[in-house]
Length: 349
Image 1 (cartoon, rainbow, N blue to C red):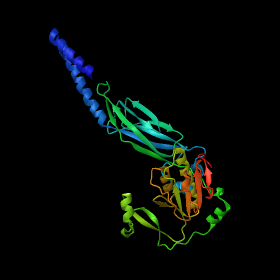
Image 2: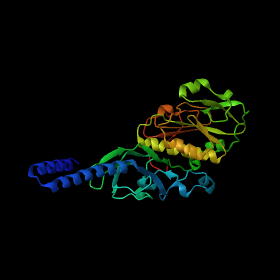
Image 3: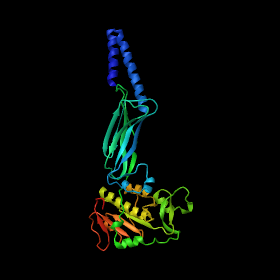
Image 4: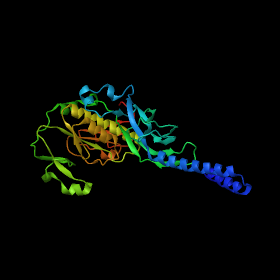
């Protein structure tokens, strides 16, 4: 751009001093070219939108997807992803109306810098595929993305930042742990669930449309910054409260805690029960997995909740002698009088 303006000024100056008429015409052509390039660049910049989407999942050999029952898979999200799996992403640009270009996109996905460009974005859109393997548990985010455009001659280049977004949520792995239970634990699990009156207060959960206003717990609503309601335990339903370490020291330990919690939740749901995790009380395995995928970012309880409680922690001080089961992840020293199972960060256990 500065070079074109400098050329225009040189032509005008030389034409006025040398009295060569055609230099003025050439200068006019250069001026028209600059104006046309500026107009095209502005039009090109406004009409492009970033496209980021999940194409298909690439299940690993030992992915839970291969073992889940069909009934559960039918209720799954559109593209369920578990840690260790891969995903085929669609990257590109969409155009509003006519074809545009040239354009470039760049940003970061799963700690990987990506930069792609094209000379033409057709009306149907421009796409490129990117395979990301060995996903980590948690949100798969696209950060720092931008769209760069210019005119075909490169006089007017511009760059537009795009907002960060979450492309997918990678769920923790899980499997049934019932074969690891002690004999007395198996007997306790096989016992009939305790009878509830239907009026016994179990806990709180977020407000949902249709909930009675009488069930709103105002004190907890003020503390959480959103409406929450009391939840009462129906008769005959076993509820397992899973207590998680609120501050795991390492990401690998947090991943293992999430896997064990998901496995305990799976066993509970298979037995017809429901699971309490923080403010979440649910029988929906996918809802529980999504909660655990964001652990420990979400608020979780570190308090013992009664006899049907499972503790999964790296801090030995959180283990509870009255709990149904205690899991200690890592090498922390623990009270020998408390019964627990120590595990590392490898999976499966």
